[in-house]
Image (tube, rainbow, N blue to C red; front, side, top):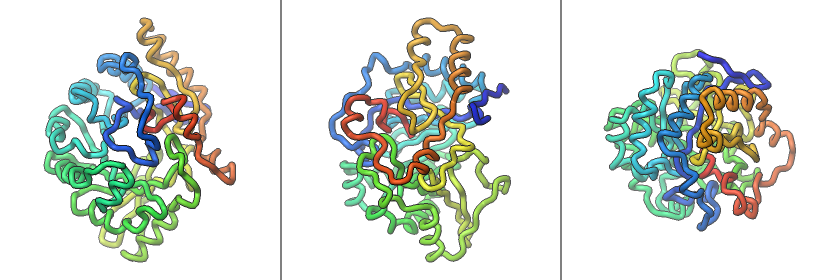
Length: 347
């Protein structure tokens, strides 16, 4: 397999692929407004265009693709895209991140299409908090969706929880228990100052050390899983993983207080073909334009290779080094450029 490295020697391996900027929730840390300037539909890549671009990425070393959004299950016939991607021998991992609302009626079709894994976002187990966080109802539907994943035969399921002080830091134990009950691994994510997190502040971040201390106070000693140990993540994975005394494993993505930029191999392709090399990047590379203009496979590979070779992004580390921080993007700027939104760029 080809190796394409950036300035720091980080490989091009992991592509987050947004298939829509639309979402059926309005989570305050991702989508701070009610009204948006959505991406023009004419700019949205069709499935054949996505497949062509994924082929070029695979030829350059990408072997992991995660479908994101917005909410990816809002994309009509997304199962057909999954079938196309699942048929690519170079892809050893094909996953989706969803808010779970549409899973109950779609999970069987996703499995049949060849999807490997499912991650569901779940920030609270309280209906009132769910409504406050998402500005919508639907927690029971999300929980039903999570339960349907195992019933459909999926393994390796994860539940992603953004931990926010004063919001849900008191739910760490119940969420671990929920994950255990449904056969999923919980990953706690430090609240990040990216995209639509316009109300972010450092005092709302619950750091990794505090999460560990809270869980240890309830369960007893928490043991880290070492790289290379059975069940441990690859060195480039964003989550540090830990084991409770009873064997339950959970993860923490400490992007805010312990950035993992040094090993980050992730990039993000938006639904309209803009390629971003870092969540903190202000600008991306247009792949839709050259593709629709008839660029050859060699030309597209050269564009991707040259862009990645020049990559010097260490956004989370640089933000941490800046000292006192304010939200990355003011809400006025979000209204000017939808590509700055997390629901456009994908997580």
